[in-house]
Length: 371
Image (cartoon, rainbow, N blue to C red):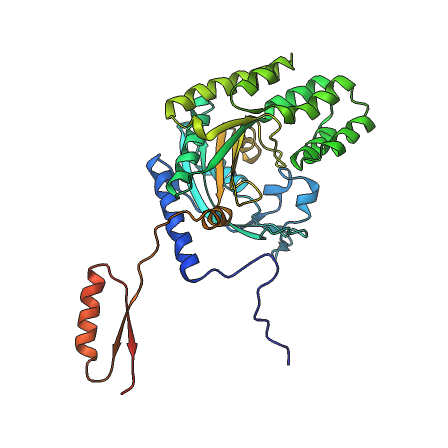
């Protein structure tokens, strides 16, 4: 007889009791904030065709997807990321009248990573996507909404770092770096392995000027004066336009009165291939990685049928909750359940009282007690 497995697989966990109710309360607060900005709910399938994600992630991550086959032999995957799924849906049914489209989603993503390093294989996400607006005002709305969403959770001590994928890509284009090499370099920069990135450039005979500059982008970090330093280092139009847009973005964020939560990082890149402009992540202490990530992806929807500019972000709820607990942030908790005991003789009166209390919004559990 096989032994029954009672523990969970590596990389997933059970959530129950106050931790579960706390998470639901925080999720609902964030969801309410997103709805106040005009975002409408959307729900896409947990699994998709592999092709929906194949071109948007690197080969290493593609090997870490949860894959299986349907009855027709098609390769399916549990979604590792919401954005391609939302983009597929939007391109198919939501963009006909060319008006701006705002959607909010929530649910789990799955990555079968072999090196956990404290990370989960199943992560709960809540996020938004904004289609049909290529303006800097849409960029600012995203970042302001992210900041307000985190504030609504009770988190106060955090920073949103902002970069632009076009700055780095402009340097690579000017240097004549091919797409394959660019991806290899970017993978190392994302992992902060600048020595490996430099070795790749040496092997590919990248001119010294550009090799030094690509490694140096990680030094352009800080307030808006970091943009001036980054601007001084480049002459190509693509990178200069990226800096110009970031400066304008900063001015709009001043109007939202959120710049105290903002800094710039021109070395910020993503392992996902679809980002085309502004890119940003939120960080706080007590968590080793970003608790939220987002950016602009203007070319992704066209791969599913209909071109449209797009931008979005996702909050990693598991990491946010870890930060809230570790920082001892004061949170709203679910009210305690009132326990009412009854026996054969007093069941009727106790039930009547429980019904009355439930109508008043109280949680009541009736426990049978034998005489």
